[in-house]
Amino acid sequence: MSNKSTVLLEHHLKELKLPTFLKEYDKVASRCAAEGVDHPDYLLRLSELELIDRNHRMVDRRIKEARFPTVKSLDTFDFLAIPSLNKALVLELARCEYVDRCEYVERRENIIALGNSGTGKTHIALGLGLAACQRGLSVGFTTAAALVHELIEARDERRLLNLQRKLARLKLLIIDELGFVPLSKTGAELLFEVFSQRYERGSVLATSNLPFDEWTEIFGSERLTGALLDRLTHHVNILEMNGDSFRLKQSRQTNQT
Image 1 (cartoon, rainbow, N blue to C red):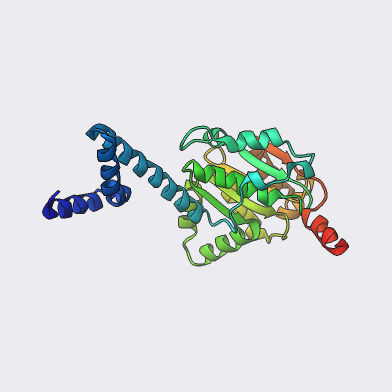
Image 2 (cartoon, rainbow, N blue to C red):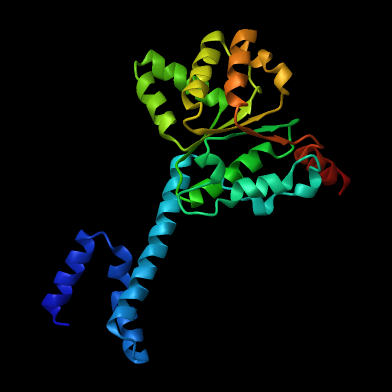
């Protein structure tokens, strides 16, 4: 190719937003020429590289947007340590066989992980969130306390509607540590509104150290708690996660060495 043609080609590839084409076209062309590969196969190889790289960038973007405190996969979770947890159900929820689609998200189902502290509820939530990101789904991660603080701040600054719309657009909203911190009446009502707006419109994954019959302690009102549970458990997958605390177990092992 002439220098002019090369400059024009690279300009067009930038305009078309094909960065992998731009980075790889010369190297792939050399390999194809050496192997006697024809033009259609040359373009096929380049397009496959572009798609693979684009998918990686999309996943990285989804993970960043989700605001996970750390990235964890289910591959590193010790299912044997929590025998009460239905491993088959967790893996089924994580499978997400099709691009841009997880079955439970497609059906607008919720997931609730219940169990005492230190049993890996957050790890499971992060693993399922990562699986959804890997399928290109929009995910948001927050703790209940942080979300309530954000909602109250947005209300005070008169941008609550924008925040609610942003939350409603997420395919999967993960709310961790529900019940760890008592909520004010205003906080409970604002959090209830988030759950209510997502009812049959988007999936929620919530983790809690409290059984359902103690959720009134979180929301402070039997009426509000009943209405919330009615919506949240209508289409739900419940993960029972009672067992010994991982953190306590690790501390004991450290002290014994």
